[in-house]
Amino acid sequence: MLKRSITVLGLAFLLTACGFHLRGTGTMQMALSELNFAARDALSPLGKEVKQSLINNEVQISNSAPFTLYVGAEEVTKRTASFTAGTRSAEYRLTSAANYELRSGDLPALLEDRVEVQRTYAHNQDNVTGSSQEEVLLREEMRRELVMQLMMRLQAITPAQLQDLKDQAERKQQAEAQAREAAIRAQQFDEPQQSPISLP
Image 1 (cartoon, rainbow, N blue to C red):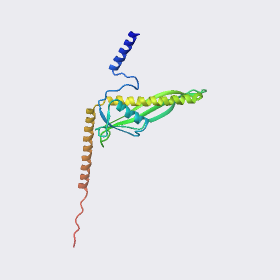
Image 2: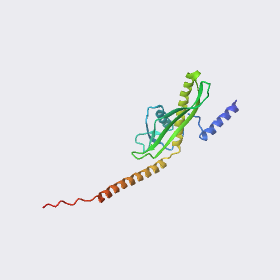
Image 3: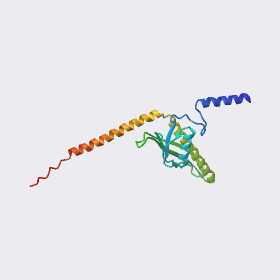
Image 4: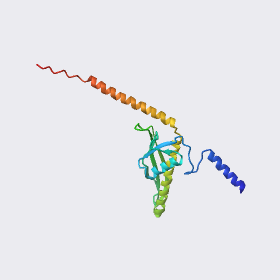
């Protein structure tokens, strides 16, 4: 028994050292130590879980942070995957997805992407309650996986990368502003000037 326990502990240590964690457990080493957080609905289950996951991963949530993580609304769909004639059961495909952006001030989004999870489950008309409960549990699991996907994406981003994207966005914004000003000046220059009115 002792030998078996040592073996299990050894395997657990090796898996943890390799960065492996059971679903829904453990934390990730984030390069971004500080972020502002905003969401389409910060009080929604997705908004709350994303914010809590950031905190669990030791990311400080601050309004004065140089970069903001914005998470859109959770988009959920349910479609028939298959239906067997003559039976009272069908398979449904559930989808949960959310768009997210990393922003800085009033600049356009520095980075934008989407996370998505799909699951298929059997709905039994003879056991509607059980099928409905299964769908609720699947939705909760899918939301947790959405959050985990998002954390893994953020884990790969460094402050230096975001700063580089910010610098590029600022240069682009400045160039566009200069181009607009030049176009206005050119238009004013091309407009015919009215001759002064000669009085008798």
